[in-house]
Amino acid sequence: MLPTSIRAVIVAALLASWADACMKVTPGTPGMPATQCKMCSQDLIMKTTRTAGAKEFATDTTDVTGACAVRTLTCTGLNANIEANILDHGKDKTELLQKELLWIRALNTAYPFETINNKLRMRQHEYVQIKSLTKKVSELHRDFVVTMVDKASGNYAFTCKKLYLQFMEKELNTQSDDGKTYEIKDRLDPVSIKLNHERFTRSFGIAVQTEGNLPKIYGIPKMHKNPIKFRFITGAHDSTLKPLSIELQKILRFLHVQNKRSEIFCADFSSLFTNLPHNVVKEKLYYLIDLMFKNAGSEYIVVQGTNVRYDRNNSSTSGRSYHKNDLKGIIEFILRNSFAYYGGNLYQQHKGIPQGNNASPQIADLTLAVMEYQYIRNNIHSGHPLSFSLNRTFRYIDDLFHISDKKDEFVRITTDMYHHSLTLEQTNTNPKESAFLDMSIKVTITGAVQTSLYNKTDDYSFSVVRYPHYESNIPISMGLNTLHGEIIRIFRNCSLFEHFLERTRQLAQCKMCSQDLIMKTTRTAGAKEFATDTTDVTGACAVRTLTCTGLNANIEASYFEPFINEEGGVVSDADDGVTDMVARFTVTCNAAGTAWLNSNIVITRLECASDP
Image (cartoon, rainbow, N blue to C red; front, side, top):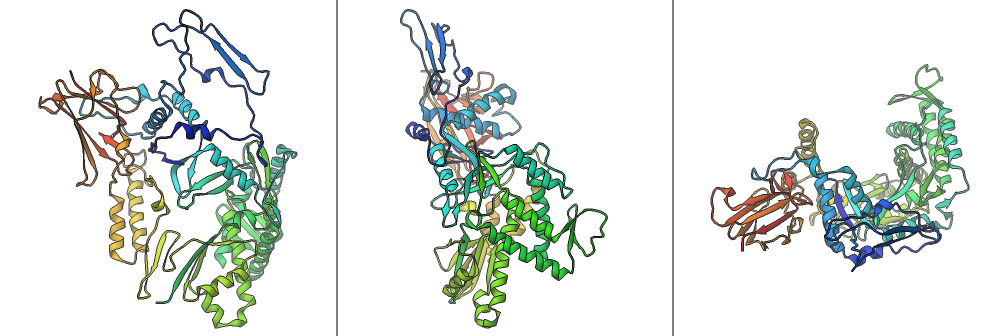
């Protein structure tokens, strides 16, 4: 799995054999659609006439009678031959994939193009063509699935297609004693489903989604887990249920608002979103709705914009009014109408709470809250012992945190408190230390509790881009406010000043960039190895200096392929003001630790050359 970011693709050497293995997906896997060959576009193979003796092909025919289209090309003439390239230049897959990733990284780093030592001049429109980039991304999609990284917005992962399909197959075939979570519903008419969604939504006076669609289900990797797991999302920005879900989300938020020996137990509900029976969800939420409306002395609730309020007599003349039975109907409708596409098949989710739905966090949170409320209410006669066991217990949706010297008693209580279909998986291995949300919590040998800031991305094996670049196309005030807000967050989470100081320094600290982010080549006449390649890490950011020695020594630098031409791509011996048979080139590691920069331009290749 190759993680990457929207601003800098992390380049890794991918063995050709691995890339080939990714494509060996067995057709007809149980629960998955069979793989089918389609007619490929002729443009997917570029026929060129670039080398000496090159000519047009004699014939180019395609046979479509079999399972897959077969294309045959012939070349005629004395010593006829056909040169085939796997991507573009006939190099091995490892080097070429590195080149394509560098190409994408170059585009994503949209700095203002300046000069390198007043010699290296570039113009974005001369080298970056969206059509060409799209083609290169499509080539990556043949072997890999590109998704976001969980808990790291703006960062992406390249997952082997075969591995990704295995995770998806396992999820879509999840089964328990109560039956399967997902069921293929290809016999249902998608148009009828969407019309039903729109009709139900309009019945409450809610505007429907323009040209809405049924969502797709996909997985994103949890890079902070070991081993790596996937979070499965069912959603779409144009889902036909989105307007109704947003409305329910507003209402549920409103209802929610109305209402020395210590060890740490931290866990999450691994099956909350995939295994909790719908009848349990409805039972708990219906109970909550009845209780809240009773306490408010009202039968109706009104939604007007972002404002939600009770209405005793349904007398409001503005906004949308809902009887408590309407809310129950909306909850039942959303749970029963969770459809999603995957691999060309239409699936219906029969259990669990679909992730990706706007109201899902509130549905999950309030379902568990009612379980907790009912358990405490039914056992209130136990008095102090129960209260003590549940003291210092916190839950945020499906993440649970408890600290006390009676951890075993608390674990026993949770088995009685929550529905048997829910599985609590402990997430901390050290009973004296754990991470909960964005806080790291530790019990010292004296029994004191220390807290500090925690980011899940700290556990990732790659550098994560968390903030926009200073020169990004955003107002400067927004960037400064982001920094100010982050410092306040660090201050609130850290109980010790040294932890606050350490975390604050990291905001402006440059990381050491990998040497491999610059490829040193020896492809042109006179090319040779660099004389020196040194890195200075004493300053705020790592600075790397490369030297090339010899008569008329020069260094060619490139932003991406092809090499910059003679107009500005060569740094020569005399460019530093001294002719000493030494050409020097300096780059600085960026703040994210993902690229080497010269005058804010990402450098990806360097080549040393001199006269013999």
